[in-house]
Length: 244
Image (cartoon, rainbow, N blue to C red; front, side, top):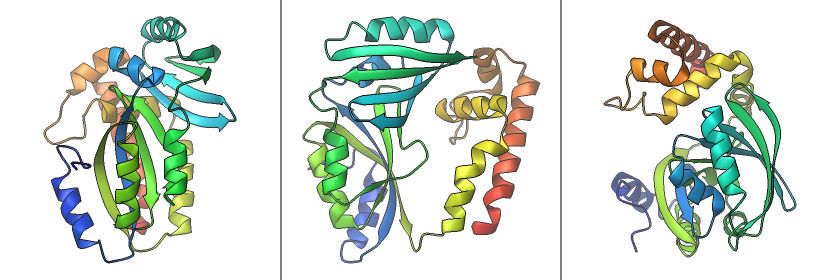
Protein backbone atom coordinates (compact mmCIF):
# COMPACT_ATOMS: atom_id res chain seq x y z
CA UNK A 1 0.00 0.00 0.00
CA UNK A 2 1.52 3.31 -1.13
CA UNK A 3 0.31 5.39 1.79
CA UNK A 4 3.08 7.99 1.56
CA UNK A 5 2.54 9.39 -1.93
CA UNK A 6 5.07 9.99 -4.67
CA UNK A 7 7.37 12.18 -2.57
CA UNK A 8 7.26 10.09 0.57
CA UNK A 9 10.39 7.93 0.22
CA UNK A 10 12.49 9.83 2.78
CA UNK A 11 9.48 9.95 5.10
CA UNK A 12 9.05 6.20 4.71
CA UNK A 13 12.69 5.60 5.64
CA UNK A 14 12.28 7.63 8.83
CA UNK A 15 9.09 5.79 9.80
CA UNK A 16 10.69 2.41 9.22
CA UNK A 17 13.58 3.40 11.49
CA UNK A 18 11.15 4.68 14.12
CA UNK A 19 8.90 1.62 13.90
CA UNK A 20 10.03 0.13 17.19
CA UNK A 21 10.62 3.44 18.97
CA UNK A 22 7.91 5.43 20.74
CA UNK A 23 8.64 8.76 19.09
CA UNK A 24 6.20 11.66 18.89
CA UNK A 25 6.16 13.18 15.42
CA UNK A 26 4.94 16.38 13.81
CA UNK A 27 3.26 15.38 10.55
CA UNK A 28 1.80 17.31 7.63
CA UNK A 29 -0.34 15.54 5.08
CA UNK A 30 -2.82 16.38 2.36
CA UNK A 31 -6.02 14.58 1.52
CA UNK A 32 -8.60 14.81 -1.25
CA UNK A 33 -11.76 13.48 0.43
CA UNK A 34 -14.35 12.17 -1.99
CA UNK A 35 -17.47 14.32 -2.48
CA UNK A 36 -16.05 17.22 -0.41
CA UNK A 37 -17.32 20.58 -1.66
CA UNK A 38 -14.27 22.51 -0.36
CA UNK A 39 -11.79 20.15 -2.02
CA UNK A 40 -13.68 20.22 -5.32
CA UNK A 41 -13.93 24.02 -5.17
CA UNK A 42 -10.20 24.26 -4.48
CA UNK A 43 -9.43 22.25 -7.61
CA UNK A 44 -11.37 24.79 -9.66
CA UNK A 45 -9.92 27.81 -7.80
CA UNK A 46 -6.41 26.70 -6.71
CA UNK A 47 -5.25 30.23 -5.82
CA UNK A 48 -7.89 30.62 -3.10
CA UNK A 49 -6.77 29.57 0.38
CA UNK A 50 -9.45 28.40 2.84
CA UNK A 51 -8.31 28.13 6.46
CA UNK A 52 -10.64 26.51 9.01
CA UNK A 53 -10.30 28.22 12.39
CA UNK A 54 -13.50 27.23 14.20
CA UNK A 55 -15.80 24.20 14.15
CA UNK A 56 -18.94 24.05 16.31
CA UNK A 57 -21.32 21.13 15.90
CA UNK A 58 -22.33 21.14 12.22
CA UNK A 59 -21.07 24.69 11.53
CA UNK A 60 -17.60 25.63 10.36
CA UNK A 61 -15.94 29.03 10.08
CA UNK A 62 -13.16 29.52 7.55
CA UNK A 63 -11.03 32.38 6.27
CA UNK A 64 -10.87 32.64 2.48
CA UNK A 65 -7.94 34.52 0.96
CA UNK A 66 -7.54 35.54 -2.67
CA UNK A 67 -8.87 38.19 -5.02
CA UNK A 68 -12.34 39.47 -4.08
CA UNK A 69 -13.75 38.80 -7.54
CA UNK A 70 -12.53 35.20 -7.64
CA UNK A 71 -13.61 34.46 -4.06
CA UNK A 72 -17.18 35.64 -4.65
CA UNK A 73 -17.32 33.73 -7.92
CA UNK A 74 -16.17 30.60 -6.05
CA UNK A 75 -18.59 31.35 -3.20
CA UNK A 76 -21.59 31.50 -5.55
CA UNK A 77 -20.46 28.28 -7.24
CA UNK A 78 -20.07 26.54 -3.86
CA UNK A 79 -23.63 27.47 -2.85
CA UNK A 80 -24.93 25.28 -5.68
CA UNK A 81 -23.03 22.18 -4.52
CA UNK A 82 -25.36 19.32 -3.65
CA UNK A 83 -23.85 18.85 -0.18
CA UNK A 84 -24.16 22.50 0.94
CA UNK A 85 -26.97 23.19 3.41
CA UNK A 86 -26.03 26.86 3.93
CA UNK A 87 -23.11 29.12 3.07
CA UNK A 88 -22.87 32.70 4.35
CA UNK A 89 -20.29 35.48 4.29
CA UNK A 90 -19.81 36.86 7.81
CA UNK A 91 -17.33 39.62 7.02
CA UNK A 92 -15.03 41.02 4.35
CA UNK A 93 -11.69 42.81 4.73
CA UNK A 94 -9.26 43.59 1.91
CA UNK A 95 -8.66 40.29 0.07
CA UNK A 96 -10.22 38.13 2.79
CA UNK A 97 -13.72 36.92 3.62
CA UNK A 98 -14.99 34.93 6.61
CA UNK A 99 -17.40 32.18 5.57
CA UNK A 100 -19.74 30.06 7.69
CA UNK A 101 -20.63 26.73 6.13
CA UNK A 102 -23.02 23.91 6.93
CA UNK A 103 -22.82 20.81 4.76
CA UNK A 104 -23.95 17.20 4.70
CA UNK A 105 -20.86 15.73 3.01
CA UNK A 106 -20.69 12.00 3.68
CA UNK A 107 -17.09 12.36 4.90
CA UNK A 108 -17.46 15.71 6.72
CA UNK A 109 -16.43 14.34 10.13
CA UNK A 110 -14.48 11.29 8.98
CA UNK A 111 -11.01 12.87 9.14
CA UNK A 112 -11.66 14.18 12.65
CA UNK A 113 -13.01 10.80 13.78
CA UNK A 114 -10.08 8.88 12.28
CA UNK A 115 -7.50 11.18 13.89
CA UNK A 116 -9.29 11.03 17.25
CA UNK A 117 -9.63 7.24 17.26
CA UNK A 118 -6.03 6.92 16.12
CA UNK A 119 -4.70 9.00 19.03
CA UNK A 120 -3.43 11.88 16.86
CA UNK A 121 -3.83 15.57 17.67
CA UNK A 122 -4.29 18.76 15.69
CA UNK A 123 -1.43 21.26 15.78
CA UNK A 124 -2.75 24.77 16.39
CA UNK A 125 -3.17 27.39 15.09
CA UNK A 126 -4.77 26.75 11.69
CA UNK A 127 -4.48 22.94 11.49
CA UNK A 128 -6.67 22.63 8.36
CA UNK A 129 -5.96 24.63 5.21
CA UNK A 130 -7.47 23.94 1.78
CA UNK A 131 -5.61 25.12 -1.33
CA UNK A 132 -4.43 23.84 -4.72
CA UNK A 133 -7.08 21.12 -4.77
CA UNK A 134 -6.36 19.43 -1.42
CA UNK A 135 -7.00 19.78 2.31
CA UNK A 136 -3.74 20.15 4.23
CA UNK A 137 -3.45 19.04 7.88
CA UNK A 138 -0.84 19.51 10.64
CA UNK A 139 -0.96 16.90 13.40
CA UNK A 140 1.00 15.31 16.23
CA UNK A 141 1.29 11.51 16.03
CA UNK A 142 2.39 9.56 19.16
CA UNK A 143 4.43 7.03 17.17
CA UNK A 144 4.98 5.51 13.72
CA UNK A 145 2.55 2.62 14.13
CA UNK A 146 -0.36 4.89 15.06
CA UNK A 147 0.49 7.20 12.17
CA UNK A 148 0.52 4.29 9.71
CA UNK A 149 -2.89 3.07 10.91
CA UNK A 150 -4.35 6.56 10.71
CA UNK A 151 -3.08 7.10 7.16
CA UNK A 152 -4.41 3.68 6.15
CA UNK A 153 -7.88 4.61 7.44
CA UNK A 154 -7.74 8.02 5.78
CA UNK A 155 -7.03 6.36 2.44
CA UNK A 156 -10.47 4.76 2.65
CA UNK A 157 -12.11 8.16 2.21
CA UNK A 158 -9.76 9.81 -0.29
CA UNK A 159 -6.32 10.22 -1.84
CA UNK A 160 -3.66 10.87 0.85
CA UNK A 161 -0.06 12.04 0.67
CA UNK A 162 2.27 12.73 3.61
CA UNK A 163 4.33 15.83 2.89
CA UNK A 164 6.59 15.94 5.97
CA UNK A 165 7.44 14.11 9.20
CA UNK A 166 9.63 15.54 11.95
CA UNK A 167 10.50 13.70 15.20
CA UNK A 168 9.84 15.60 18.42
CA UNK A 169 12.18 14.77 21.28
CA UNK A 170 10.10 16.83 23.70
CA UNK A 171 7.39 19.46 23.59
CA UNK A 172 8.58 22.84 24.83
CA UNK A 173 5.55 24.79 26.05
CA UNK A 174 7.35 28.10 25.73
CA UNK A 175 8.04 27.37 22.07
CA UNK A 176 4.36 26.81 21.32
CA UNK A 177 3.46 30.00 23.17
CA UNK A 178 5.82 31.88 20.86
CA UNK A 179 4.28 30.27 17.80
CA UNK A 180 0.81 31.30 18.96
CA UNK A 181 2.00 34.89 19.23
CA UNK A 182 3.75 35.05 15.86
CA UNK A 183 0.77 36.59 14.12
CA UNK A 184 0.88 39.52 16.52
CA UNK A 185 4.46 40.24 15.44
CA UNK A 186 3.43 40.84 11.83
CA UNK A 187 1.24 43.48 10.28
CA UNK A 188 -1.76 42.32 8.24
CA UNK A 189 0.04 43.30 5.04
CA UNK A 190 3.21 41.40 6.03
CA UNK A 191 1.21 38.30 6.95
CA UNK A 192 -0.75 38.43 3.70
CA UNK A 193 2.45 38.75 1.64
CA UNK A 194 4.21 36.00 3.61
CA UNK A 195 1.30 33.57 3.15
CA UNK A 196 1.06 34.30 -0.55
CA UNK A 197 4.82 33.80 -0.99
CA UNK A 198 4.74 30.50 0.90
CA UNK A 199 1.71 29.09 -0.92
CA UNK A 200 3.11 30.09 -4.32
CA UNK A 201 6.44 28.34 -3.63
CA UNK A 202 8.70 31.36 -3.16
CA UNK A 203 10.62 29.67 -0.33
CA UNK A 204 11.11 26.38 -2.18
CA UNK A 205 14.42 25.46 -3.82
CA UNK A 206 14.41 26.31 -6.65
CA UNK A 207 11.84 29.09 -6.26
CA UNK A 208 8.55 28.46 -8.05
CA UNK A 209 7.63 32.13 -8.27
CA UNK A 210 9.51 35.42 -8.68
CA UNK A 211 9.18 38.54 -6.56
CA UNK A 212 7.77 40.34 -9.61
CA UNK A 213 5.03 37.72 -10.03
CA UNK A 214 4.10 38.01 -6.35
CA UNK A 215 4.05 41.78 -6.66
CA UNK A 216 1.69 41.61 -9.64
CA UNK A 217 -0.67 39.25 -7.79
CA UNK A 218 -0.66 41.41 -4.66
CA UNK A 219 -0.91 44.71 -6.50
CA UNK A 220 2.35 45.96 -4.95
CA UNK A 221 5.77 46.99 -6.20
CA UNK A 222 8.54 44.34 -6.16
CA UNK A 223 10.49 46.51 -3.69
CA UNK A 224 7.54 46.58 -1.28
CA UNK A 225 7.07 42.81 -1.47
CA UNK A 226 10.78 42.23 -0.85
CA UNK A 227 10.73 44.61 2.13
CA UNK A 228 7.64 42.99 3.67
CA UNK A 229 9.08 39.48 3.29
CA UNK A 230 12.45 40.48 4.72
CA UNK A 231 10.85 42.17 7.73
CA UNK A 232 8.50 39.23 8.35
CA UNK A 233 11.35 36.71 8.14
CA UNK A 234 13.46 38.79 10.51
CA UNK A 235 10.71 39.07 13.13
CA UNK A 236 9.86 35.36 12.99
CA UNK A 237 13.49 34.26 13.21
CA UNK A 238 14.16 36.59 16.14
CA UNK A 239 11.14 35.13 17.93
CA UNK A 240 12.11 31.44 17.61
CA UNK A 241 15.90 31.36 17.26
CA UNK A 242 16.50 30.80 20.97
CA UNK A 243 14.43 27.60 20.85
CA UNK A 244 16.30 25.98 17.95
